[in-house]
Amino acid sequence: MLKNPNQFNIDKFYEKYRSGPKIFKKRDALEPSFIPNELPHRDAQIQKVAELTACALLGDTSPSFLCYGPTGTGKTATIRYVSQKLEQQCTEDKPWWIYINCSVVSTPYRILAHIYNRISGSEKIPPTGLPKDIIFKKLLGILDQKVQSICFLVLDEIDMLTEKKKGNEILYDLTRLNENLDYCKTSVIGISNKLKFKDYLDPRVISSLGQEHIVFPSYNADELRDILNKRAKIAFHEGVIKDGVIPLCAALAAKEHGDARKALQLLRKAGELAARAQNKLVTRKHIGDAQNDLDQDHIVEYIKGLPLQAQVVLAAIFLISKYGPDHIIISGEIYDIYSELTQKIPGIRRLTERRISDYINELDQAGIILTNLKSAGHYGRTKFIKLDIDLELLENIFLEIDKFRNVINYKPVFLQSDKVKVKNNIYKKLI
DNA sequence: GATCCACAGGAAATTAAGGGTC
DNA sequence: GACCCTTAATTTCCTGTGGATC
Image 1: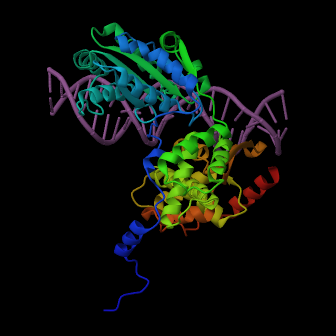
Image 2: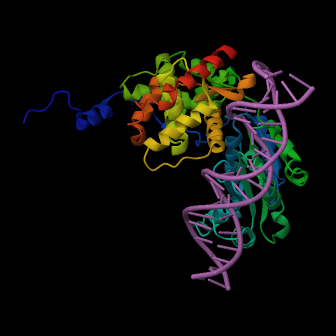
C-alpha cells in the first residue's frame, strides 16, 4: 500500500528533534518551584526571614510571622531559600518545613489532616469523617513523637482562610499548638497577596501571628531584567537568546505589577516555541507569540475546567451573543436560556436562579464576561452582560467539549419571542 | 412621594457524599 | 446498622437597591 506523503512520521520527527538545534540547558530553572543559589533583589527580606528563624538553630521556638506582597514578588521563593540554607546549617534535629497552599487545602479539618499526613508520610487521615478535635489530638501526638524539634508551618495564600467562617479559628488553633506540646515546637509563617489581610484577622490571632511582618514590594523592569538574565544563564544554552528578548520580557512583566513568575513563564514559553519550531535562537517574535499563547491557554484551560453547570451558563451567554449580536444581555434572560439548555443537554438538572447568579459572578471575576449593574428604572435593576473573549475562540472550545457539540448551533426559542425583542429595545434606549 | 420592577446578594438551612466509631 | 462528623454544593428566605412611572 502506498504511503501518504503528508502523513506525520513520528520516528523521523524525534530523530530531527534530537539532532536539531538545542535551546534549553536546564528547562526546570524557569519553573516556579526552582530555587536558585541566589535570589536577586530580596536581600532585605532574606535577612529578616533569616533573623526570625535563626533561633531554630539553637532549638528555640521561632516567632510566627506574616509575609505580604503582590503575586510573583518572591515570597514563597524566599521562604524556601532560607529553609534550604537553615537546613544546611543544622547538624542534627533539622527543622521540619510543612507547606500548605490554603487555596487548595482550605478547610480547618483538611489543614490538620494535611499536616498529620505529611509528618506520618502516608494518607492516614481520610479527607472527611473524623471529628476535628480527634484529629487535633492525633496531630499533637505525632508532632511530639516524630518531630521533636522545630516545625515551621508555612501557610501560603493564608487570606483564603479568613474569607471562610472558621478560618480564624484554625489559625488560632495553629498559633496555640505549642501550649499543648512537650518536645516539638511549631511556628506559623503566613504568606498573603493582600496587604489588608491583617484587618480580617481575629485579635487573638494577630497577637501571636501578626507581631512580625515582612513586606515584599513589586520588582521594577530593571530588577526583572536582572532576575531573567541570571535565570536564563542557567536555563538556556549560551548565545540562544537574541539581544532585546530579555528586556522585552521584563518590560511586559513589569507592566503586570512586576510579577517575576509571569516573566519567567513568558521566557520559558518563548523558549519552548523556538525549540518546537527547531529555531536556533529565541527572538522577540517568540515572546509576542508566547504571550498570545499564554493568554489563550489560560482561557481555554479555565473554561474546560469549569463545572458543567457554569459551562451551561456560559453557553447561554454564547448563544445570545451568536444569534443576537445587538441583543442587550441581562441576567434574567441568561437564566431563561440556561433553562432551555438544561432540556437539551443530557444528564443535567436545572439549578435555581440564585445559584446561576453566583456562576455569572464567577465568570465575571475570571474575566470571561463583563458585567455592569444598572437600574433601568421601572424596568428593574439588573446586570448588563457582555462576552469579554473572542466568540470564535469560545465556539472552538465548546466544539471540543462533547456535551456542547450539539448545542452550539441551537437558536434559543426565548430569543425569537416578540415580547423579548420589544423589551430589549427598551433596554437599548435606557442605557 | 409611593409604587413597582427585576433582580443582587447575604445568611442560614438543607442535601448528598464520603468516611469514621460503636 | 445507627449515628456522628466534615465538606461542598445548592436552596430557601429575606432585605436592599435605584430609577422610571404613577
